[in-house]
Length: 153
Image 1 (cartoon, rainbow, N blue to C red):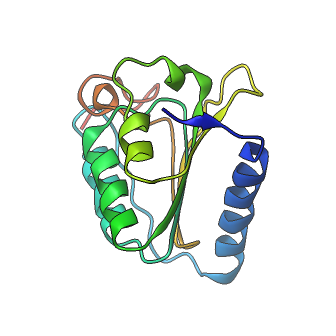
Image 2 (image 1 turned 30 degrees about the horizontal axis):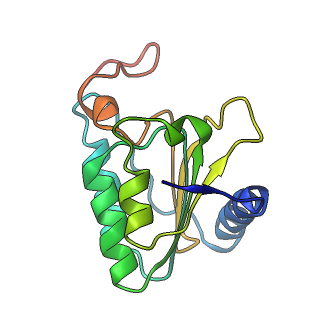
């Protein structure tokens, strides 16, 4: 499973810093919005990961999505630098994908400094930011309700 590191704050800060740099340097040309359940969130995330060239920074509360874990490992095998920060609940999560990515050589850290590390963010190549309330889980894709006032697709 993931090892707790004191570098969690540094990794998270780096993710936020890089996402800020991307916003300053790159004009916004493309927004894509997905909702769950069955709104294509997992497919959108795995598609973005398939295009990753240099870096992927992940911070997630819950991480049980096998397709997303597989896409991260595939990107890692292509030479993409990947780092993952997860909530401390993932230490004991029965079906966590954290073990899978860690066992495939991806640095994986636990944020135990906060009551809940509730973010769901990916920063890909300092150009693409994936964020929202979508947990990187099978349940989020198949069962979770969309946000208030938003109809399911």
